[in-house]
Image (tube, rainbow, N blue to C red; front, side, top):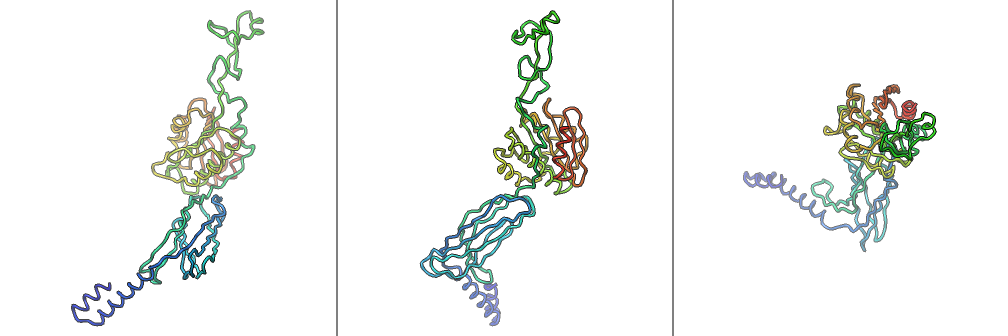
Length: 368
C-alpha cells in the first residue's frame, strides 16, 4: 500500500497521497526495527500432570527467567494449546529475575492435546512484523476417557485357572472330558483301569484342549456405525474399562482399534492410546471386526466386539461369524439411554448398553 500510494502520488502529482504513502513506509520501517534484537530468556514449561480424565483441569506453570546481564524490556510469550494460542505478558526483568504464570487447561472431550512450544514474540503493536523465538519443545497432554470400576464384575467372563477349555478334544491335556474305547496307538498311561475292570474292555481318558486366556477387544471406528459422537465416546469408555481391568488382572490382552493395535503393557499406556482414537471413513466397521480378530488375535479365547447403534442384528451376527471357532464372543452395542439387554446363543452374546455405569451389570448378565 505504501509503494502504491507513493507511485500514484508521484505520477499524478497528488502530494497528499504521496505523504500518506511515506507515512505508511515509515510505520513499516519502525515495525521492522522493533523486531531487531533478541531477548535472552530461560523458559520452563512444567505440566503438573500430563494425564487427566475428561472433565478435569490440567494445571501447568510457565517460568520465565532473564538470562541476560542487563535488564530486559517487557515482552509477551505465546503458548499454543491445541488449535488455540494463549498469550502471557512478561514484565521488564532485571538480570537473573524470574516471572511465573500459572494456567489451567479445561478438558471437556477426550483428546491428545499438544501443548507448546513456548515462543517469545517481539514486534510492533499493529502486528505488521513479528519475530518469534522458540524456547521449549511441545509436550502431549492425554485426556483419558471416563472409566468404570469392574473389580469382580468380569471374573466369570475372564477367569483363568489352568487354562480355559476349548471345544477341541485331544488325548492328553489338563481338562478331563470323557472316556472312550481304546484303539491301537493310544497312550497306555491314560487307560482308566477302574472302568476297564468294570466293563471288561480297555477304556482311555479323553481331554479338552486348554489354553491360556487371551482377551481380544475390537472397536469399530467407522462413523457409519454410530448415531453421534457421544455413542463413540461411550464405546471407547467401554473398551478402556474392560481393557484396564484385564491388565490389572495380569491377563493377556489385545486391543484392536484404529489403524493398528493399542499398547497394553500398562493401564496408562492403554489409556494414552485410547485418548487418540478417532472415527475415520477408512476405519473398520462392525462387519469387519470378526475378521480382524481372526487375523490379528487368532489365539483369543474371549473376544469383545464393540460398536454403535447403527449396525443391524444381521450385521452384528455377520461380524461375529468370522471369530475363530471356540472363542467366547460378546458383541456390545452402544446406544445412549438404552436399557441393558443380553441375548446369548451358545458361545455368542449380543448385548446392548446405554450408559457406562451399566457396564458391570452387563458383564454380570453375560456371565450368568
